[in-house]
Image 1 (spheres, helix red, strand yellow):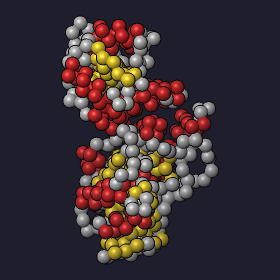
Image 2 (image 1 turned 90 degrees about the horizontal axis):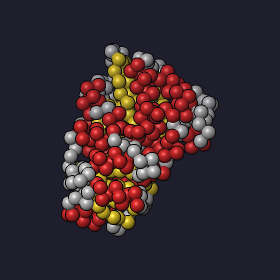
Image 3 (image 1 turned 120 degrees about the horizontal axis):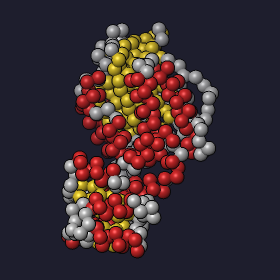
Image 4 (image 1 turned 135 degrees about the vertical axis):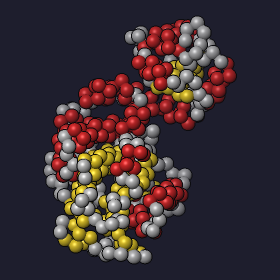
Length: 403
């Protein structure tokens, strides 16, 4: 992997070389003109390009690289203190693949070089996803796109004031996502986990989010079973056309829930995922008109584990149907949604999975505390469990007290 560092400040060049020399072969240029001549002579894999330079600035250099058909595929990452929106927009319009702010953070530098290398190697496969045609250029900046799609804290809190979100992608981007919306007295939430993690899973998650937004916000559908079936149909429509076995074998585990504020009924559909409900003082819960007892209890708190269907929204299989659960909630009930990333995380002294049992015990022990405190307890326990182990999958855990 050859990286060309372009900066007119020698100290910046030395810093970048010291960070990169153990992993990559590096060369340097002190201005855009010198850089362009070196690129023509021996094209590098990646160019780390400053903006403010003599003779030929970074914008002009970037434009010359990207308009030369022989050089256009070179990854160009802008490294600069000029981070005003207009400058970033101009760089992206000229074809920059990403940008890093000064002062340089080593972790961000390594991660962005790695992700853009993998994105470049996956370019042919990415082209098969025609649904992304209108945002293909921006897919290289997939992390920023995914983050902008997820509901921000303010929006989430407006719909669910008493709640928490623990969201930890394994990589910079991942396949777990959550979606929320409100239509009059109906509140909708979905938590989804795309097959795998990293860039491929993130691409599927972006498609899922776009389709959920259309189904719920544009078509005004919040009934969970209808949302789930419509989503599967759209995924089949977009990805089922591909001859790529990777694309056609992707699946989605998902939770779809609608809360009726007037009747306090939670409708739940689970495609391969359960939900957990904690209730104080009452050892039963009404589901589809039937009383169901808890599976755990402690200090007058009762835990209800409500299974979804053993069906993934698989893009190949058309077998199996999803079922709807109508759950009568009581005041102060807390509903927990989670992907398998937390329960499948390896760690601990015996290097085992965190497990559903451990998660449920932890939720039980945290009852009586605020949801904000519960999030902190989960985060600390997960961090302690993981220790020196790598995170194995994307993680999302959401807790909501609906009323």
